[in-house]
Amino acid sequence: MKRLLIGSLIAATVLATGVVQSQAQQKEWKEIRIGTEGAYPPFNNLNAKKELEGFEIDYANALCAKMQVKCTWVVQDWDGIIPALLSNKYDVIVAGMNATDERKKRVDFTSVYTRTPISMAGAKSVASTDVSPDALKGKTIGAQASTIHMNFLEAHYKGSTARGYPTQEEANLDLLNGRLDYIVADRLSLEDFIKGKGKDCCKIVADVKRDPTIHGPGVAMAIRKEDTALRDKLNAAIDASQKDGSLDAIGKKWLGFAPIQ
Amino acid sequence: MSDWVALLSFGPDGWGLALLQGAWITLSVAVVTLPFGLALGLAVALAFRSSSPFWRTAATLYTTVFRGLPELLTLYIIYFGIQLLVEHLIKLAGLQSQFSISPFLAGVVALGLVLAAFSAEVWLGAFNALHKGQVEGASALGLGRFQTFRHIVWPQLLRAALPGLGNNWMVLLKETSLVSVITLQDTMFIATRANVVTKEPFLFFGAAASIYLFFSIVSSIGLWALERRSARGFAPVGRQA
Image (cartoon, rainbow over all chains, first blue to last red; front, side, top):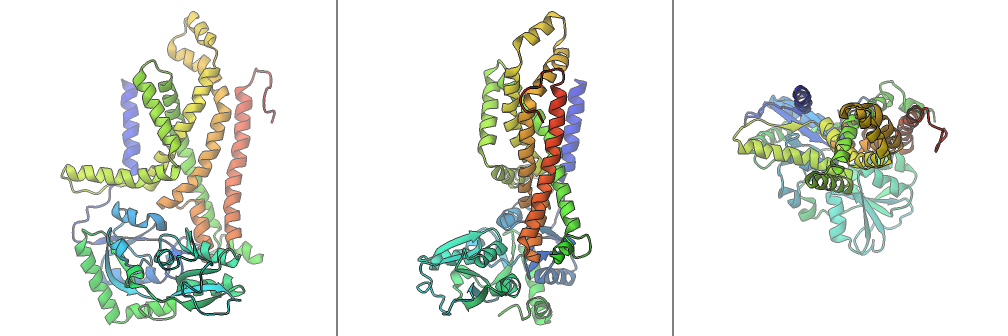
């Protein structure tokens, strides 16, 4: 009996230390937890000191200062990023996520704060700049899995082979070693790659035409459907940042140009 | 090559410290999971051997489920599923507070459940290797059940189970890499993030590989020493070194 009591006490202590009781978030929203991927420079990435840095980090922190709330960041792998939001691990996703109709079925989105061109990159030896589905028939095209780029390939490039990768970096690597003929991604992310590792092998071939049903209106912040107060608060802050130029200023610093094209 | 050294250094731009912290997380998850997994595995093995059909069925169901599901799936179920379940129950009870299972605990629980399922089979094999006469002899000498277990059964059980359990430990060390998908910043997490920023996959995946190999080598030496000790007094059989 004594052993049983001690045993259950130990079990209860272990359970208690494992369970993190977060403060009850009344509709006041004094503290916001932000989820991001941390693997998509220049939007969001981790540096050597394990700190988050990037356009979205600076932008969201600026919005938090404007809204006078305390923001904390959580780094979550891309594939689990929406489930974690729905499981209440954090309150908003700021991770270069496009507001597609498919995602709108599970989560709500704020106003768009970034819309950059989408391009295809290929080997330097590629002659034509035609990236239509007919021109690329039979080719192998790569993209990050579970993204609008992958959906775009699956919907429009049925004559080509589409390959999905856990991160953009891995798709870039396969273009480098010749396993892929093309990759499709956000042009900024591709330029980041072409300026660095892809300097000798690859180039940006052309921009692809946006399909609004697949690509959505642009990059926005995702929140749970029931958090309408948070959405309104964020939208107000985003609109204010567009009017006073802070969005463009932060965008120019990290992306080289204004974020909404 | 020289910038490879700079990238791995402990300075402000070097990932050396981050990698070491990741290695610490990997080791912590494995070491904390180990006792729970082994103890639960022993309990499941005893359930397998019990005379009650209820416990035998329960044990069979447990090992089938947790050996059959991919560990990644088990991890997702524990991390996301349990949270949703508990929040649903809290809502039903009409309370308002929020509940959040920590990723470390979720990782330990998920990996512990899987370790227990695989260890149960090892313990079972060890029980079968135990000669029935040993327990009968102990009872003839008047030893109580706990004394028999502690002095007669347990040392021989350990000797038979050690190779299999050592194997499970090595697999556990590798499986800890899965916790990178539930926000724990372990070795694989740091290696992938470092690769994304520095674009040096070979360097960082090589560093991650070295870390896992280091743990593996140290574990092998430890297990060899344990096996030698548990086989003391017996003629050397099987692996020599």
